[in-house]
Amino acid sequence: MIRAVIIDDDKDTIQLFSELLESNGIKIVGKGYNGQDAVFLYQKLRPDILFLDVLMPVYDGVFALKKIRESHPESVIVTMFDKLSISKEIEINRLKPSAIIKEPIDVDDILRVTHKLCMPAGDSLDQMKRTMVTLAIKNTFLELGLEEYDKIVLMLQKDYSCSLEDCYDNPEYLKQVLKDLLGDSYNDVINSLKENIKNISSNKTTLNFLDALSS
Image 1 (spheres, one colour):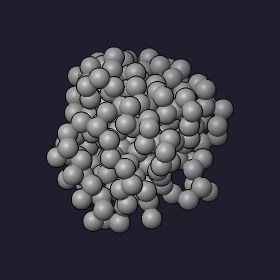
Image 2 (cartoon, helix red, strand yellow; image 1 turned 120 degrees about the horizontal axis):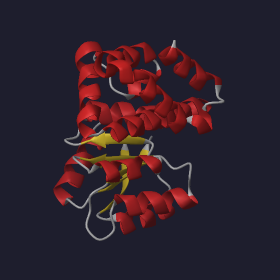
Image 3 (cartoon, helix red, strand yellow; image 1 turned 180 degrees about the vertical axis):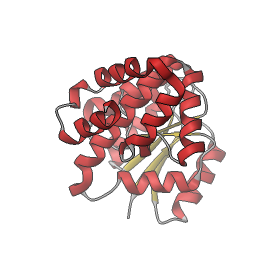
Image 4 (cartoon, one colour; image 1 turned 135 degrees about the horizontal axis):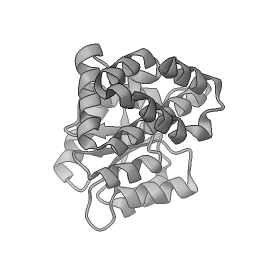
């Protein structure tokens, strides 16, 4: 059974979220209300997955993510938030959360992400590649501005019923959306994306993804 910790400064949200997860076979082993609680509970309980609200008073999700990543870089942490400034969202992405969930929470999306992230160890390397590429994509689009980022996400959903995370397996969808939206600026954005994932671009699957966009 998957063991989870939930961190949110709203007690009602934690209660509702806990009930939803437990009704779908996920065991809640800890609950906390700020970033300090998150660090303490992770160290104590070592859950399979940590659900972390970003916007909390005093010690927020950025504090917790940074501290946990320092001692446990392999930790599975899903950050959750409604709206952030561009700079704050880029900061979160650079700390490499395992996934990002936008509020209001969609139960099906949470369950899909949870089971995907808590797959058997044999699948963890591919999941890491997928996560790093997705984070690089998000950072690249956020650098264009929140308005452009939202347009890309909406076009992917409208035209192909897919999310940014799905583009790892379907780069042709992302390519077409970017070409339609950006026109002559397309190559500049792809170059920026290449720069953002240069640290993993030696991996064959990542190169295939880039080749599909550039061809």
